[in-house]
Image (cartoon, rainbow, N blue to C red; front, top):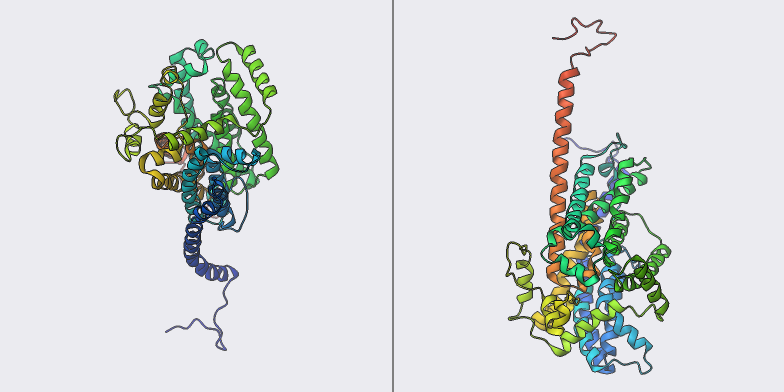
Amino acid sequence: MLSLRLPGGRGLPRTRGARRVVKAAPDRARAPRVRLWVAILVAALAALGPVLEGSLGDGLGWTIGLVILMLVPSLARAGGPRFHPLDPETYVPVTYFLSVAYTPVLRLLMSSTLHLSSRDEAAMEVAYAGAAGCALVCTALSRPPEAPNLERLVPMQKPKAILDHDWGNMVVGVLGLGLVFAWIASIGVRRFFTLSYADTYLEGFGKGILISGWYLIQLAAVYFFLRFASLRKARLRVPTLVSVAGALFLLSFLIYTATGRRGALIFAVASVGLGLHAFGIQIRRLWLAIGVVCAIFYGIAIDGFRFKQGSGLDAQLESAAARLEQTENVLDIVELQRVYDNLASIVNEEPPLVNYPGESWVNAVLILVPSPLWQDRPLALSQRYVMWKDPDFARSGGGYAMSAAAEGYVNFGLVGTFIQISVMCGVFFMLPLVVAAARETSLLGRATGACLASFAYNQFRGELTALLKITLTLGIGVLVALVTASFAKLVRRKLAAMAKVRHGYERPLRHRRLGQPSSSGP
């Protein structure tokens, strides 16, 4: 048998890369075990809340324990402890904290007695159950960041070329714009800009397919921003079409702002930031802090803007300016207060919103059927809640945000909250961001993960049915992009083959050693 050994008994030398692979293999095999033990420790840490509440009381134990659990994923991060707002281990827990604990913690810090009311104490117990699930899932799914494979993502030979996937995502964005413009046309352009805030909700009933065009636009915008970033990271010039498409798709969200919606633009910008961060482009915390401050003042201004919606642009701008001037404490965010108050109301008053345990989870799937096809489909949990809380407000087009923690509690109590928050964190938020940061993930996959995760706060303050609708719409967008890219690839190959047949024999093979060709063609 041949022996791969040098004279003197020495083996063949290994390259540095081989040594790295050999050393990395045991580390990779050991990583799942390490994450398992860390997750077990986090699960044990979840018992801290009841212990603290038993000794402190007045909701202090639940509050302190919740804050600790929200910090644990960042401290137990697979790549090392770090607090960065766009890290999945920080981003997902922070969005959950905003939806259930920001308001009571602010009340606790601003109170002189440092205790919560019995109403808030009951709500914080439910919020703590969800925090335990969020911390456990985020810690278990944490993965170290990986550098993207630029050789796979960037066409080095033709950097200026428009890729097949560029055309696919262009079609997705244009399709989204078409759906949105169809929605506006169904209302009337002039009437669209004069509707009140409540009337815009009423005009959206039964037109969810058209309104979902915004998700397609967001997907296309994030893709083109990632395409831009990949080319710049490879130090290549960016095609003009890529830059223009990304900018136009993102700026189109200003149209949605005209309807008094503040979330769409914020989530679109957040998805771009998450996508770039997962791609390895570090955004400085200073810029993120400036962005958060701008988002807070933007939200306050839009709240005043939509108060006079339908009364003319001048009246709306004056109302927005007045709301900014009247705001005494920018930390007291009205939207977060309303979301938390809805959770406290459901936990303490226990309204009869479901006919059997788990009904809203079943209805979340059934509601995916478009209302034109099923007129008597079940009502969403948020619709049932507003009809129970304020029927007149509901009939006028108003609505209340249904907290995901509250939905889980309505179905199965504290266990239901733990299950729902765990599933939402793992399946819809944490896992998409982990996939988006993987080395071999395509730009479209990264864009999809960032878009889905950008709705973390919006869906923690919402319910499961809305999250399923968003996921389905993004899935359809991905399918359209892939089919269009495949079609563009087929057309390109057909055109290349036709060009080869037409011109292939008109240029006879010439070589100085072969002499002149015998003929110029067949």
